[in-house]
Image 1 (cartoon, rainbow, N blue to C red):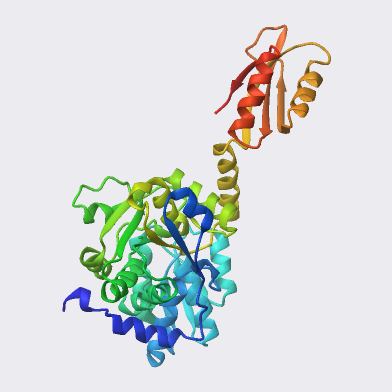
Image 2 (cartoon, rainbow, N blue to C red):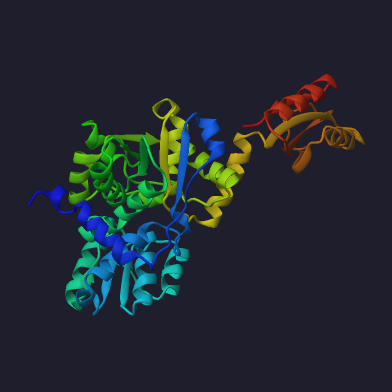
Length: 406
């Protein structure tokens, strides 16, 4: 069987009929601010507004609704993220017993969130292959249905319904940017777009640390280690599936890479500008448009915030780092005389310059300065680079030795 014919536009349209009334039609609107910044007309599809905050509900629910007799006895899946929560939620809602197998290293917050949605959770395996094999064995032992998170026609058809919505909501798109992990989302979108409007370019985006699809598409040696830490764990997949790889090779126009720093900045921008929370994978599309604006300049560009399930500690760190990058949090070392009132004079001057002190460290014994002086390290709240430069210039004009700290 020709793999790319395993799913067709007809399959996606049938999935859309099944899903009608079960899921919301998420907004797909132009960001005026981001469009002005990036030199293109940028439209954002807010899939993070689904109940479990991810597009994964589309594929999971389509699989459950298409084969009611097959899934009545129960379903299982291997997932540590959005597929797990989507399957747990809709399985419980439809009265279908759901068992999710997660690696032992899965953060407890994700485990508990999946349990709260009604699934039985089993922690098994320390690697992808171990956990997947256990899930396959479990499905056979219990005679229940295994629903793969991405390499399965019904899942891909469900994910493709997002493209039907996008094309009906915004006309004359030139490009759609889609994150690639396992490849289910981009396969579904490309299947729809290349029939209904083949002039639209489908551009995939991967993380530099997980670039298997990029390397295969461009016929280059794989350079990523495919392990380690990433802010976009939702697309931190070693490789797309067999079916999704075939569809990507046939229907996707380009695949590009983004760095960790660019994805962090995109999360920050989406929260500040669009007032929406995106997980790393959900912000990867914006990261690409921002990092390579020449590819998209003057075009009508669609991108998806495909998920919003980000750990609160990670989000906190991303926001802090974003404030540092935009010079709204600035760290300075300032040498002052070791005399009474010197610190008070410095803080009074900073107050006059409208610079708020967030943190201050004043060490005598461990400083490298003269014994007659001391170095004060301050974290200051600023309005941006212009105020940072002004504060530094005024301090230096007053005789202070000022050193920025990275």
